[in-house]
Amino acid sequence: MRFLLFHTFSLIFLSLSLAQAEPVRVIFDTDMANDCDDAGALAVLHALADRGEVEILAVVTNRKCPGNSSAGAADAINTWYGRPDIPIGTDKDGSKSPPRWNKASSYTSALHEEFPNDTPGDDELPNALEVYLETLRSQPDQSVVICSVGALSNLEDLVRADEELVKAKVKELFIMGGGFPRTHHPETNIKLDPAAAVTVTNEWPTPIVWQGFEIGNAMYNGQELIEAPRENPVRRAYELRPFRGGNSLDHGKPNHDLATVLLAVRGLQEEHWTVIDKGRVVIDSDGHTEWLRDFPKRHRYVKIKEHPRILTGIIGELLAAPPASRK
Image (cartoon, rainbow, N blue to C red; front, side, top):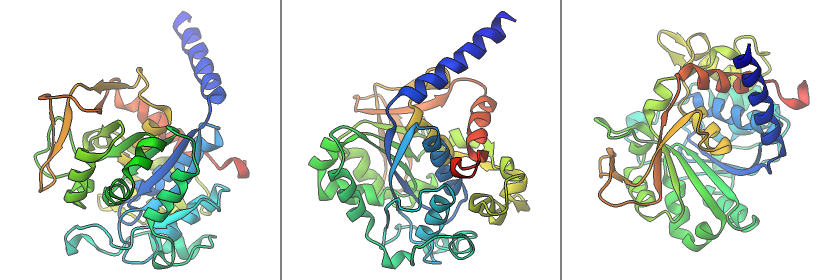
């Protein structure tokens, strides 16, 4: 009984603390074209915004969508959550991945066409770099958190275009990419544009927190959306994304990007994460990542401290939460 009371009071204290804190200002950089965890991550970001924990400054896409609909899919999700006016920019060059990777998305065109939004095709929107520069210039110094869950192409463009602006405005960069302490095979987000990943790793001027693929592989989310209304575009994304002979709504999906959003907004909570520091991430030209301790940079990576089901439950609750505007 004493433990239950302590746990209850701890949760109440955490909720009050989060509610009283100033919202984290986030730019969400996503490859909203292939896997549905990008849609899920944006849903989690909106659920946190509904709780007053985050202000979504902009969404930029970093992977060319064959259906020209990555921005439309993102705007459909933004509209569902009552935030239809979030600026969106797109990467017109696309990732440097092999052509066989650039298959039509299983869900972006459907979200763009089936759900309310007012966004044209990706090729008609501002460039991601323009949105980055305009957004950062309008923010206070050291106030912006960037959450990157795809290719690092936009970030390379940004640091090359105005490193001083990045240094002035960005507080921290959270990256879903690579694997730690080392990868045997290049992880997808790094392999999308290895050269950009090398640039960002070596030249980015603010602290970076890395979340490797092993984190998402330990936690599955998506089934929480089965009972969601069919008007929910995120439910539709999981329904359309094939997985394990069925779909991601039936089986759930590794929650790589959803976990990164939670990290970016709530930070490195001691009860959930073990933080590895005093080292640096190294990426080779093929996209392999490795953690070295030869000399420290402002790099850290995380490991799950507790049983993964605890974080899975937290993320699942946020994923399934109805928009505040529709409660």
